[in-house]
Each structure stands twice: as C-alpha cells, then as structure tokens.
Amino acid sequence: MAVPAHDERDYEFAVRFGLPIRKVVARSPSDNGRESEGGTDDDAVYAGDGVLVNSVSPSTGLNFNGMPNREASRKISDWLETTGQGRKKINYKLRDWLFARQRYWGEPFPIIFIDGSNEASAISEDQLPLILPEVDSFTPTGTGEPPLAKAQSWVRTVDPVSGKPAIRETNTMPQWAGSCWYYLRFMDPTNSKALVDPAKERYWGPVDLYVGGAEHSVLHLLYARFWHKVEFTRFRANDGTPVSADIAAKEGGYMSETVSAEEVVKVGNEYVLQSDPSIRVSARAHKMSKSRGNVINPDDVIQEFGADSLRLYEMFMGPLRDTKVWSTKGVEGVHRFLARSWRLVAGLQKAGEEGSTAAAEAPEREPSIDQLRTLHQCIKKVTDEIEGLRFNTAIAAMMEFVNSATKWEDRPKEVLEKFVLLLSPFAPHIAEELWSRLGNAKTLAYEPWPQAEDRYLQQDFIKIAVQVNGKVRSTIELVVGADEAAAVEAAMADAFIQKAVNGKSIAKKIFVPGRILNLVVR
Picture 1 (spheres, one colour):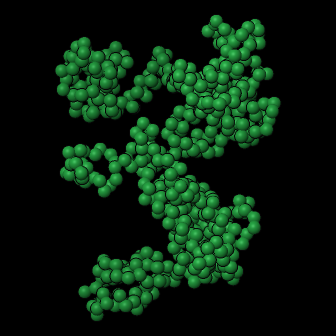
Picture 2: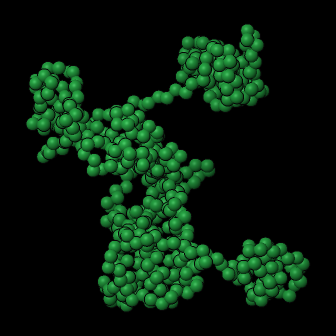
Picture 3: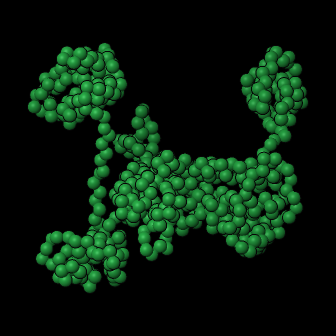
C-alpha cells in the first residue's frame, strides 16, 4: 500500500532508503501532518484511528481533511462507485493449513503414487473408506518417514487403472480433518450409502451450538465452512453455514499458575520474587502449553480428588468465555462442596456404619414451605444458568442450597432427590451413587428434569438492612409490601437498633421499600 507513516513495514523501508513519509491520518486535527525525509520526523509510525490530513485532491475537488478516517473511507468508496472507477468488495482469505502429519493416528490419505513416479492419484470410491492398518509399533521410523511407512504390506499396493505397482501416502490428516464433517455424520450415523441423508441434514442442521477455544472458533469453523461448501456441491448438503454463527461460543482458555502468590511481592509498580528481588515477575500465569511445561495432567487431579471434582472445578472457575487461571486450591474447594453434598444426602447413617444405605431412610413426610421455597429457588436458578451456559453461577446456587439444607433438622426425601438431579449434570458419578442410596433401583439418567413452581418462588417475608446515621446496625424481617411505618416499628423493636438510638430523637427516616431503612438520629 506504500503508507510509511501508518504501516510499520513500510515505515522501516522508507527510513532505510530515505523515502518521503507523508502523514494522511493524524491523531487529532492539531497535528500538522508534515512530511519528512527518511524518517527525520520525530513521530513514530501511527496505525490507529484519527482524522485525515494531506487529503485534498485539486483535480477532483475532493477534500477529506479533518474527517474521521473511517467515515472518509466510506465516502471515498462511495465516490469511486458513483464515478464508475471502482466498487466496494470484501475479500476473504483462507489461511494455509498444514494438513499432513507424520504420525500413525489420523485419517489416511486415499492417495497412491505409481512406482518411479511422483504423480499422485486418488484411489477409486469403491475402495473407500481407507482403513489404517493394524501395527505393532507406533514409534517413528528413524528415517524421517512417518510411522505408517513401516507397514509395508499396507503401503505397497497396485494402481487399479494401470495395474502397475504403487505405494500409498504415509502421512495422515490432522485431527481437525474428521471434525470438519463429523457433525454431518452424527445426523445419520448408520447410513451405509451416503455421508448423510439430505433430508436428515436439512432437519437437524445447522449445528445449534458449538463450543471451542479461540483456535476452534476462528480457524476450525472457517475450515469447516470451506468443507461444507465442497460437501454441498458433492452431496447436496445444506448450502448455508454448518454452524449457527450467532451461537458459536468461544470457550476461554486455561492458564496455569507458574509462580504462586506467596512467592511474589510488589515493589513500587512492579512484582518481584521474594527469594530474589532482582528477578521481575511479568506474569504469574501463562496459557497451558507443552512447550512451557506448565500443563496440568488431569489424571493426577482425578487420582487425588476424583473425576467429579475435576469436572466441577472446570465449570466453577468462571464464565465459559473467560480465560481462567488454574489453581489446585480451587479444586480442593469444590471437592469440599461435593463432600458436604454427600453428607447432606448419605451422611444420615450413624457413625461406624461404613457403606450404609441409610440415606434411603430419609423421611417421606411432606417438606415444609420454607424447604420447598429453598428447593424451587435453587431449581429455578440452576435451570436458568445452565440454559445461559453460566455453569459457575449454577454451581454457586447449589452451594447456597447445601448451606441452607445442612441446617435442617430433617431432610425430606423428595427435596434430596430433586437436588441430586440438579447436581447430576455437573457431578454425574457421585449423583448416581446418591440416587441409589436414596432407594432408587434405576439410573437417574432418564429421570425428568425438576421444574420450578412459581407458587414457591413468591416470598411472603423479606429481610432489609437497618442503618442508624448511615451505619448498618441490624436487619429486620418484614411482610412483603410493608410500608415505612411498619418498617420503623419493627426496627425500633430490635435490641441492636434500640442500643444504637439510645434515647435520641429520630430527625429523619429514609426508607427504600424492600431494600433498606436509614434512621438519622440526633
């Protein structure tokens, strides 16, 4: 483009060869946009938004000086179209994809090479699918060839057209190859005559929700769309997008803590190691990477805390789309929550009754109104948060339920069963065990999802804070819809408020219904 004032590479080229550097975008209208020779201008290259300078064309009468650069870009495009000198167009670029892998595991290429020739040819369709051979060793060959090269009986074949000896391609496709079309196969997995029945593809497609990391949501979906267009031409698949773009969710990545908080101290505006203050710490966590050596082995976590704790922690770390920093202490926290959930349901057994199924003896009596309110508020919250992919707040709602239910003198079976059903998508193993201990002979997998009932979501009483001269002194319980007079009466009957007022006169009352009462006393 040759815009050295606004492109780093062009700028370096202009400086190297002493070329004029003319500004056309200034940070503000006050910049004079002077031209410099060979980079003598003191201003660094500027690639941001701003206003146009040096943008007057005497021959056309156009003057874009002082106009925001994005607005000017649109007007320039409009002028070119109006005068017939050009038109607006969006160009798409498909980034090159290194498609060959030198490993055994992967889809084999259906390509052969005739002996003595570098010409590649595809095998016939009646030879598809091409299946990987069974081998005894998956290790590299030591010659630079892929592991498949060791399977000579599979590699050596015959060209069906010429009848000449041929060899198969021994590289394999990357794992993204299969996932560029497997969503179609899921729609019609037993079809032996076609990739997918077009009628089934039109019914099921496009994919409703796709969850993946940054590489998936940017690159993989791009390649998948490219494949889909080819499949449409060949198999008459749905010619639209394979994945609904408006609900393709980008999953945040996981970062691993390489330096703990206890090892770092802040000095001025920087952080340094406590053991050696001369070493500055730029970041305590980095994206998990094999090259950094900071990958967390899930097998180790499962060994110590169990699969449910690992699963639950990954969902509890934060919003799905955010980047999260891994902390083993966090796993310990959700592990404790699962332990409390276990004690809530199965902990009804007496001491020493290891393995007892005493949870089946949970009372069959009708739950109280307060218990039903607590349960149905949890059902409502968990259901809404799951549908919104806010798994961390769904787990938080179940933690609140366990805190409340632990204080109950008795725990009706009806309430415990519904809680276990809420827990099951997050911690399926422990939930199945608890379901069994509650006396259910069949799996919970086919049980209907609990439904929140509106009648239990309505509150008869609310609690509000009471302030005296702006400081919270107590909380009071009021009937929903109580007015200021009722709130003041309840507050003045509270021992903590009486002590705070201490015989002084109330000069002013500030009441926000359902929120707070503030008494100004003198």
